[in-house]
Length: 312
Image (cartoon, rainbow, N blue to C red):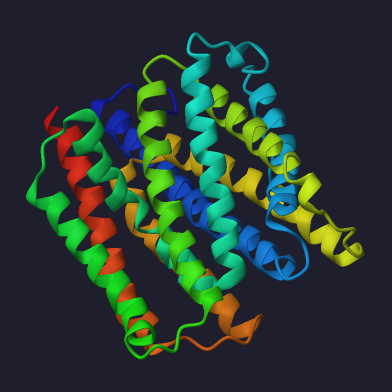
């Protein structure tokens, strides 16, 4: 501070520091959304030939590399993996692994933008799960989030169902996408519970290990030997996913969740561009109509959560 202790100088320096941190936090949140989209693109590109269980294994195994390096860099590996609630980790990791299976299976059956849009239902489902499992109060924000989310889903699928033109693959894609949202919501409830006593690094580490084991269990159902490009995409899916989690974690260390929330919704842009430019899949009119409804439901659920934290 140039040797000066004048109050205005100190205040100006603090404001500048906070602003720089917020800018970094926003940049990291945008980066994490881009990396998650890159991961999904790799998964979509390989899903036509590589079984879902094999994709889950590679995504988890190679995500473990940046995660361990990050925890070691923060002096949290291996001591940060100690736990007093192994069964809690088992339940959370199992739910998260099942959600990953459902998510990747949905990506394989739907346009990437539609599969990604369904992930935005998770905050709404989490809000409902908090009422059912944690006896939290049912508020107008939660009801509004559920109604907008349901309206978005109906808008997305009803034209095809109503006219009987939806094929089985798309139907299962939507079902698995919704299942992913439900499973993710329960997994996040468990994360909320575990975070009271457990280290965040341990929660992430055991989830990755459980997903790897879940992927290995699918070996008897038939894995394939991908070509060099497919193998590279599987490795990149894991690395992108691992670095995306790290970027998101660091973003929340530099900026408040309320500041970062709008940039979370901007992440839908990358799958949309991927569908148009890479997979040559045009956006449907139902997607364009459902997009603001589902994002509004997610925003209401997130807003309710921030209000609750502010009041507590």
